[in-house]
Length: 330
Ligand SMILES: Cc1cc2nc3c(=O)[nH]c(=O)nc-3n(C[C@H](O)[C@H](O)[C@H](O)COP(=O)(O)O)c2cc1C
Image 1 (cartoon, helix red, strand yellow):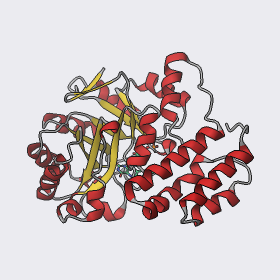
Image 2: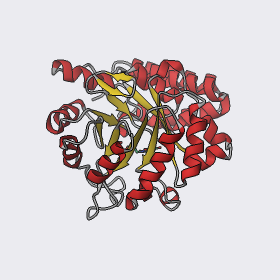
Image 3: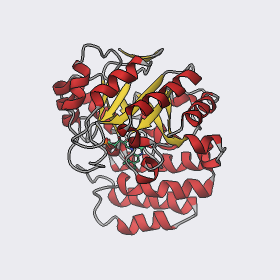
């Protein structure tokens, strides 16, 4: 068992990564259904939260069936981070996660996200401010360092644990790498092997198959792993990995009918959550992934993404099922 504060997770838990515009309640519900053990909201700006920005507040929506669930915040100002932790606490998540890894310029320029990797003292102050203002467990997600010449995750891990951080997830790239090149988990393995480190250490980056998950589990000896991009349009990955860990055999791939069901649920849940118009708009980006690999799919996708009529979109799903049922995707 892996523990974060009072949260009990199974051995070697699989975490759904926080992903902006992706990790919202409908998507999380699908991932939960298919085996994710711990999930996070997309990152939420602390400044936005305290300005009461509607968009930021909406990202705080969580539901009991998705527990345990964490809310992720980011920011470069101690007071704003402390205040936003208090706001986050009002919706009663299981934990608060701080993002010190976002490489995007608009975040880094404000001294937040991965920007803080250049200033570990500031990172520690920001984290302390959050820990002091909440009774929830606080966890951190970050990268290896700013660039390959300044990998400082060893120092970061020790200092964060010393002030009370209860788990650390490392996306095993530097900020300079953005999403390019490979993630190098050997740096995360080193943290885990540091005898001073007792908090759970989760690895993240490039897990896209059950084989790779097992290879990395065996090779790096961490406490669990976080999966992001590979779950987009493919929430089945969590149970596929778990099954492979347990049996060494593969679950059958989801059928077209299961893919259509997932897309339908996603759309329905998004509309239930955000209303018809926004639900339809925000689910559009997922269809390509649910139906990846289907030959001549473009025409159907175009129908799905250009309509604002839910009935029409549901009919298109039924049409897709009729045409492609029985095709096996690898
Ligand atoms: C579309 C997208 C949005 C992301 N948004 C966030 C975010 O809000 N917070 C965060 O910590 N990381 C974010 N990330 C990074 C992921 O959480 C994860 O660290 C990264 O994708 C590497 O994992 P993967 O190879 O399994 O995708 C985002 C990544 C993607 C692709």
